[in-house]
Amino acid sequence: MKNAGHCIGIVCLLFALVLACGCSTQGPAAGMGEGEAGAGTAKDAGIRIITEEFPPLSYAGADGKATGLSTEVVDGILTRLNQNADIEILPWSEGYNLALAGPRVALYSTGRSDEREDLFKWVGPIVAFDQTLYARNDSGIQITSLEAAKQAGRIGVVKDDSRHLFLVENHFDTIATCSSDAECLRSLMAGTTDLWFGSSANAADIARREGIDPSALEAVYTVRTVPMYIAFSTDTPDNVIADWQGALDAMKQDGTFAAISGKYGIV
Image (cartoon, rainbow, N blue to C red; front, top):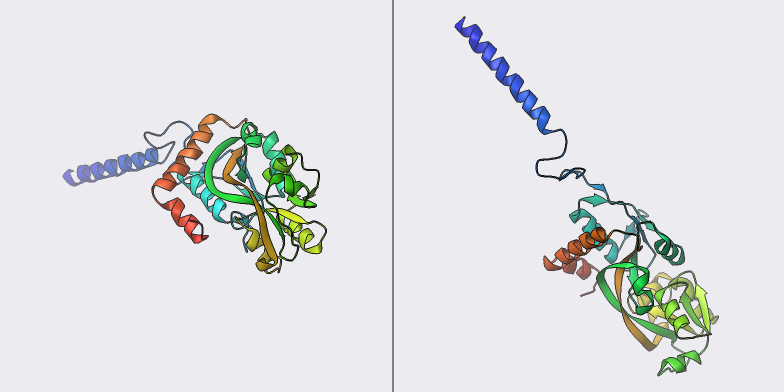
């Protein structure tokens, strides 16, 4: 009887342990709010994330998925927030208008400028670059002011980009819009336009991708320096903006952001 009682005690103990283990794997972890995922389970970000072909900040990798400096930063933010989201690569004008309309759209990398300030909510900055007028190196074009630029010929610029908005705001009437910077560059080299309103961040890289020696281009006038941000549609809740900004700030503080930038030669 003594042995039988001992066996019954062991069985009861094992049964209690099984019940305890089962309870510990159900529902949110202790100390987590209702609806929060466990540490190993990323939840949907609830944001439609859009970018464009704008190397080295964002572009399609060999697998067709978005990569680049800004993309790695966005991925890092999502990881720190224990969230996941697909990133779409769309033509700039399409993505820009989706971000204007919402709901809950994030668009990167977006130049934060005076004319756009109230159109979005902002997280950043990620990088800054010069918005520059480029000419063919044999053009002989020299520009010393915005007024001179207005007289220098047709200017190719990406439709709905901050550079396009800048030209419109400053009453340029020699604008030729393109769907991409690569198209603007091709128009410049073909002589269809006289200038390309490009970016110091990627002008050389775009030229190489198009099979053009970057030395065939000449930067003839730097218009302004613009910081690049993640732009959110204005319906995005403020707490989402605060969470994303906090995650980005933490990446900058612990060296993660610098490591990403360094991979792309931007310091």
